[in-house]
Length: 209
Image (cartoon, rainbow, N blue to C red; front, side, top):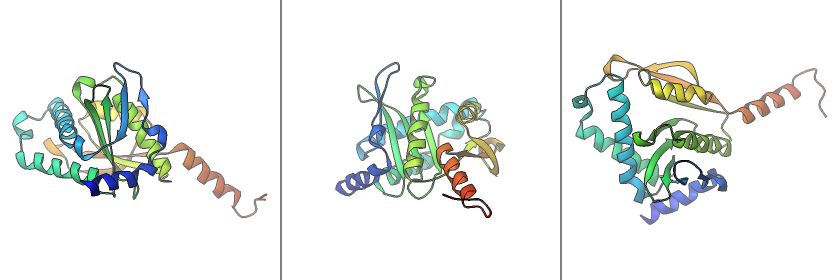
């Protein structure tokens, strides 16, 4: 447990201090780095969210009740929270209830593995707050873009990511129910613009100061 806490501390510089922000919504909420104590609640949010969107996409409940997959999800969250190779965050109400979770590849890469929000909190800004935290973590890691996969029948998620600037990048991989996961990409505006400016200023034939 001490090693896990130390790993979380090492990841903290990737997240600006304002990352531990408080948002005004239906209830005061905090976005913070996840700890081992959050794992059970994070898994519950993940399970509830995926069940809701897969059912909405036409899968049957029996197809989702796989104990081995549940164990694999639990192990995946444990690796994300306790290791130092990923960033894991959670959205927490003032009463301590975890209502949203996030896992991403920073500091090594910008892949957004997942954002999940408890279905009862959909539409309240929890997902947008987690996404904003993800973008800040990208910037802090000096990464120019992010990538993710979204299930093509998850219309709600695809609309959410489109609103936040994600665009299809041509990647696809097989998903459940005969529907693919679609690759999306997000360019971080500030870093993209800075890179373009640097490239332009050093181009042959262009004066530099």
